[in-house]
Length: 105
Image (cartoon, rainbow, N blue to C red; front, side, top):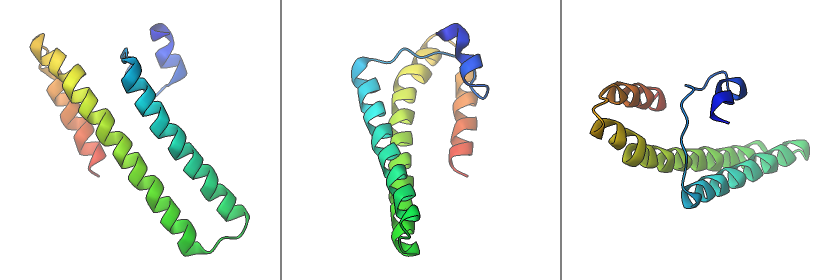
């Protein structure tokens, strides 16, 4: 699977992360809830829901995505970044700074 990551995602770095079952389950549950929220907004739009009602649901989706990012970022810092620094790979610091700049736009 790791060999084909660039084929699966042309925007990905090509790096691979083996996640523990607990972390994977938590992240997947969060994404599935967000997916359900997006489907709910789609249904609201199709049924002619009032604009502000849809906007409030989209705001909840944004909040859920931000929460997902916070959990993923914390896991990344505690594992990938810390491990790379311990191994003497300080380039990971530049990588995380770039990511943080993009996240804070």
